[in-house]
Length: 102
Image (cartoon, rainbow, N blue to C red; front, side, top):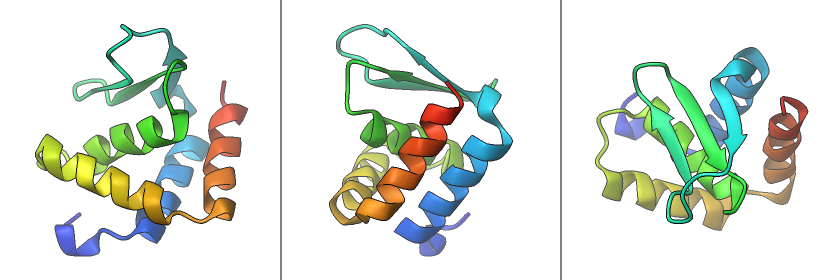
């Protein structure tokens, strides 16, 4: 997916689809206190620490999955943009989907 195709709607929809279709890809665990989440490129697995903001971390790690060539600074900027602009309804939709696979 190119940079031009990045929108909050596209990321929310694609994240919801991943949560629905590939629940085995996601896990919640207690990671090191300074680590909020991890994306394992080889196995395409996302681990979110329950000691951090789950929604924000989930989007951060999913952005790594969707845009593997983006530098960390771009991922952080996109995560912040999503968190600043996501609707309550979309946030609830993603959180419900995430909780349902735990």
